[in-house]
Image 1 (cartoon, rainbow, N blue to C red):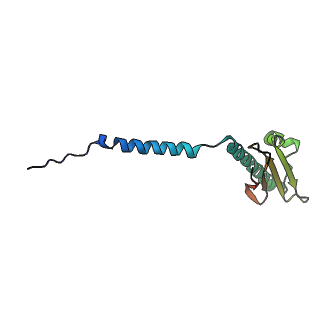
Image 2 (cartoon, rainbow, N blue to C red):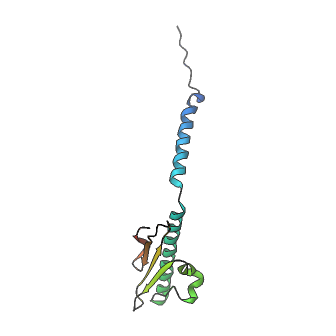
Image 3 (spheres, rainbow, N blue to C red):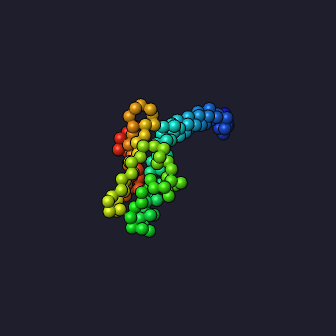
Length: 128
């Protein structure tokens, strides 16, 4: 007897491909979702890092740090008035720190973030 080999056809694997596609889509949706609270925290960290960049640029030109609360910088850093921020400048103008407090999840405990002249990355000091 002669045995005829049939090549596998594509429709035999459709169910496997569909299952894999659904699993990949479910994983993408689950792991790409950012909550409103997380989005607000990311925005605050980005704003603090913006302050760092402005401070470094100003320091390179004037050899001292500026006070971001001053009126001439309100158009760039107006958000400082929107949240509980504390700006600390060293007496010699050679150091600065901005500490921000916010309660994004509404649990009554504010998170605390800080950026200063030592690092371009905002650090979380207290979890929200």
